[in-house]
Image (cartoon, rainbow, N blue to C red; front, side, top):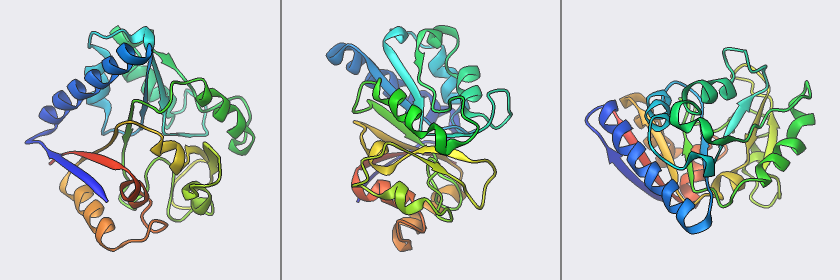
Length: 230
C-alpha cells in the first residue's frame, strides 16, 4: 500500500495546489512526449478545480481529457459527467483540449464498451494524470461493491479497458474504466473533501476487502496521492 496524504486547511488551498501540480504534470507530458492525457471524475468535488484549470495557461491543444466513468444518459441530462466536464473544464483557455468521450450512440452501455475502448486507445498512455473520487460506500469510478460486475472490473488479467455496470445502489447504467485501465497512469490522485470521506477511506484501507471497498484495490496496487481538505 502506498498512500501519500497531502492535507490542506481548506478547499481553496487544495484547489490551488492541486491545479499547480496537474499543470506541471501536463507540461512535462507535452514537453517529453508531445501530448499529455488527463482522466477526471465527475461529481461536485472537482468543480472548483476544473474552473481553475480552465483558466490556466497551457498548450491545451496538446492535451487529451477523458472520464474515469460515465452514466449512460444523454448529454443534456443533469447526471451527465460529459456535460459536467464540458461546461466546467473544457472552456475558456482549456477549450482547445480534445475531449475523448466514453458514451456513444447505443442505447445500452453493453453495446458501447467496444467504442469506448477504441476511443481511449487514441489517447497517449500511460495517462499522465488520473483524478479519482470516492463514494461513501468505497466505490471509485463506477466500480461499485454491490454490482454484479465488480469482479470483472477488478480483474487485472481481463485485458479490458472498460466495462458496462448496472449498479444496484445508484441510478443509471454506466460505463467505467477497469482497474487495470485506471492503474495505467503515471500519477494517481484521490480527491476528497470532508471528514466523513476521509474516515470512510481509512476504515476501508484498514478493514475491507477490495470487492467490499473497491478504492482499496487502487491503493493496494499503485502509489496514490490523497488530496484532502476538511
